[in-house]
Amino acid sequence: MPKNNLLEKITALCKRRGFIFPSSGIYGGIAGIYDYGPLGVALAKNIKDLWWQDMVEKRTDMYGLDGSILMHPRSWEASGHVAGFTDPLVDCGDCQKRFRPDKLEGWKLKKDNQTGQFRVIKTGSLKCPVCGGRLIAKVRQFNVLMETSLGAIEGEKMKAYLKGESCQNIYLDFIDIVNSFSPKLPFGIAQIGKAFRNEITLGKFIFKTREFEQFDIEYFTRPQDSTRFYREWKKIRWDWYRKRLGLKEKNLRWRQHDEDERIFYAKDAWDIDYFYPWGWDELEGVHDRSDYDLTQHAKFSGKKLDIPDQETNQRIVPFIVECSGGVGRTMLAVLLDAYREEEGTNGIRVFLSLDVKIAPYKVAVFPLLANKAELIKKARSVYENLKDHFRVTWDEIGNIGKRYRRQDEAGTPWCVTIDYQSLKDEMVTVRDRDTMAQKRLAVARLADFFKKKLNS
Image (cartoon, rainbow, N blue to C red; front, side, top):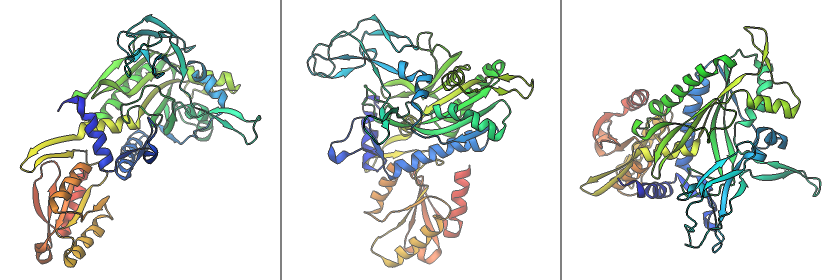
């Protein structure tokens, strides 16, 4: 399938089937902001739940956190975001639109990660990609933090920021978790949280948005152990995408940050990239961050953030291994990976071959005919029984073929149809989404059959 129109097909399917809608669509929408519909909420929740189970609940060295969106503004000065969280931009002198020159042909820039300033190494194309006019060659810095204010009285309000990245709560709550639980090094703190950025370059559906969620792990180690645990976490995160989410290995790669790209305090930094329709792009970053974050927040807050090493009885500032990925980017990769088109006797069949662990619905239940009371009654009893075990949907709209197509596009792994024969022999037809194979099964066996499939 050509990559150039795959994103368009996924975007259309997501709106048609209730995964994702443009936010405020009746008012024309807002660029880079989306609402998750019923199926999108379910898919995103299943992905997040799987991450939380694997990264937090199944581990004995991880502590969960749900930090607030608003934090003390000094924390963003300490983290370097107020000064350095910048993108470069150039203006079109004709249409007045703004663009990131590092995304335009021929441009090469170098960023000072401490000041946020960009130095132009090479000036590329000055042709506006929208109107064809001439771009103004001067490169300006644009801070992508979203500003807000706290307080009720004008003139007394305090400037604040919406979180530019979700992980900062972890550093601010680090010492509280240490005091509450006395964890031994190494240990981690994990969070799934919202972040906000005034992005300049958008247009890749939910890959880059102004409001998004991040998976974050900050793993605290002794300084001498950080490299070893960095290697371990790289393997853990790679295996999660491959073995737990089921993404195709051919669509994944590791990419190391070069010296110009890597933040100045990091010992090492690699990204897990996914092959999106526009090419390779970041899915998750796994970074060996040294002790910079805790040291900076200790300096700006005046609070000690060193802790006792229970092996040596010395106080140390731990080094940090960070794993940070985007929920939206992961969900988009899952949808792209799962999208299928098959030529059939009734035209092209479109379906999402989602891993059964994360599919929004596990089973759809149909009465063969929607206007026959006895079929509806029997189908309802099957539906009521199964929904105590799995997320099940009821569908009686249109003919059976249209229902199959609708559930295929929703990624529902199995459909159960109750027909007139079911009233006689307590057997139903179970259809597989990927193969379209059908088999007759006893109603009494359905729950166990699906449980076995889901746990295999």
